[in-house]
Image (cartoon, rainbow, N blue to C red; front, side, top):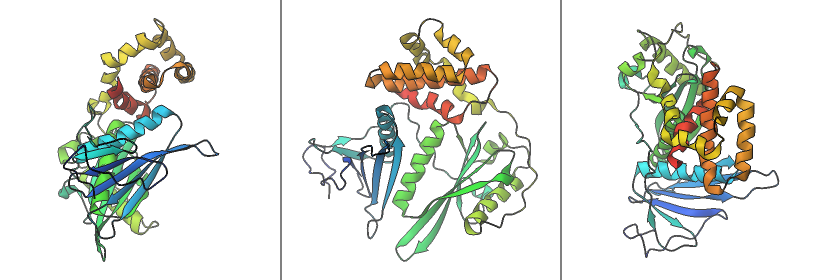
Length: 343
């Protein structure tokens, strides 16, 4: 077992997988994480692979997840996001195979602390825990956590529900994990909270927060939607009758990403990579011209400039959609916030 009291002399366990590059462990020795890049195969796809183990459980249950990426800067971002999620969860140490010593994992500048509070009990149902996220254009995402006792101990199922704000009857449900121990369930929730926050989703927990999005009397509709979510997990063909959809009030709180388009860290990129006035020209020309221009810039840029070009492209796309009265894709809006940490 790793001795986490020192960052210089302890020996790390050897790599367990061919692609493993980093080994992480928390100070409480409950959570072990191994990560690395899986080389591209015949299909040309490369993957960032993460193996997690719950050291505090009998049998040490584990979980593996693979995320595809197409270029080196995307792989760098995936690694950055993993470390951000670890850093805001607890105290972790990192060892890089082939190098000596341990390094504390630091929280990247600008990374928000995740709010893991669930929706208040008065708005919940079925003994489950709900985490509700709202996006002005993309609608609602609900993570539901259902606990159960098993011979191996307490385990958690986590599912994801999605629906447009005014169309709860079109709820789509996907089971994410069926049997996670507490350590791995919490790690998953932290990652999802950060990912959704970066994509400009806002967490709703209290009744007054829901009232900003839904009209007065939203409680019955919300409870019916949550019941539908649970019923779809247990009985996919049985869905409760939804309450009539309501109009949502407009609240500028949920479009605050637009303010970051004027952030000096973002605007400085126009002068760095574009000719004077070229940003306005691209905004007018639209998405296809922006993507064509950025492909040329990516091809000529150094490795440390690639994340900056992602910010530039996202900002130009967001400005162009706003200029032409089109909805801004949540991923595009999220990248403006997400990648600005690199600038």
